[in-house]
Amino acid sequence: MSAHMSQRRPLCGALRTAVCACALMLFAACSSGPPAVRYLLEPAAVTDANTAGVGVSSIGLRTISVPGYVEESAITIRGDGARLIIDESAHWAEVPEAALTRTLAESLRLRTHADVLTEPLPRGFDPGVRVEVVFDRLLAQTGGVADLTGQVSLISGDGRDLLKVLPFQLLQRGRGGDYDGFFEAVSVSIDDLARLIVDLLQAQS
Image (tube, rainbow, N blue to C red; front, side, top):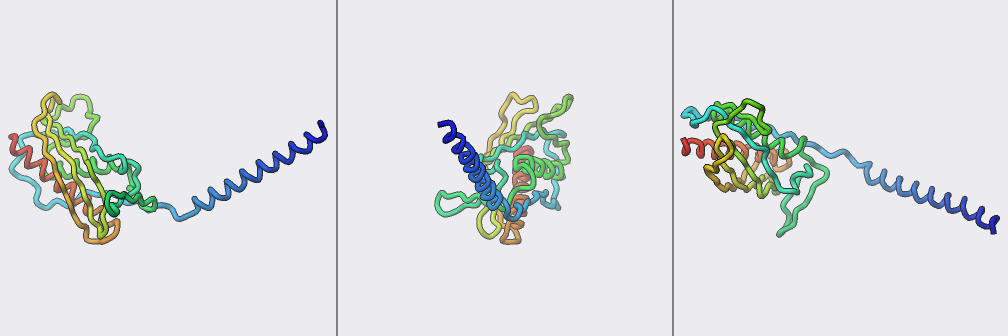
């Protein structure tokens, strides 16, 4: 009996080694494709900055909230019906929430001439107003189109009072029909959102 068992153990060990080797080869084959292309979101050019003032000299901007399918950083495309297509070959260059917040903050600085800082706010910075943006949808469509919907909220500087809530729907087409066009369309949409926030601030002042 012991001689029989001693013959089976090396055989089982060899079998496990072969299975592991096959699994590693399969994983290597699946992961040996070209690396994903990463796209950087940059602020849109602002040529018509506000000169009338917005009633505040400092703005606190909360990190923008996005749907779960955007958090993964792979670009999400609208398919037929309710289908969403995740393109693992194309990714945001940075965390989408950070990219969108950074871009909106820059557009707001250029359009309001106010100090715009993102949360967490540094100690000693007491904003005149706080801005929160929540995206319900952020999708790419064919032809370099960006489809963004959500709501923007104005909150008092101390964070206690909700001043205004306004839904928005933004649909922009970039100059190119590829992902470069999509990111250009997102950039322009974020600047349109900054315009909307400026209008809300002026209405409150």
